[in-house]
Image (tube, rainbow, N blue to C red; front, side, top):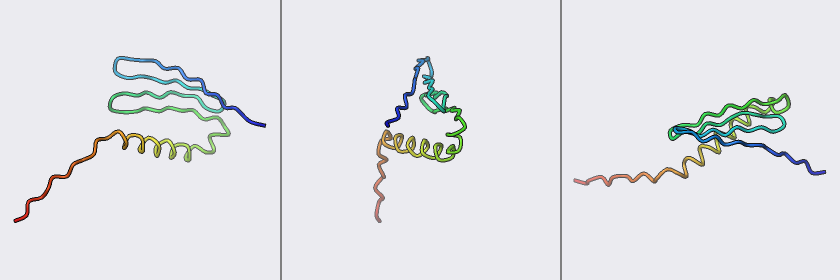
Length: 82
């Protein structure tokens, strides 16, 4: 038997940030995305609450990877030899 986990999302566009409100069985919250930061507020239900540290770690890891891909490569200045 296959379980289906549908998440409902609503995007609210603002002048300085956008907000994504989300809900599904066991979790609801919002993600605010601005030019210089993210703000994630999620409320986990009883069953998912037991995995909150793991969920938080995975979100941070994935965001770090995605943000690193978007950064331009840093060019190192060539040192002068005497």
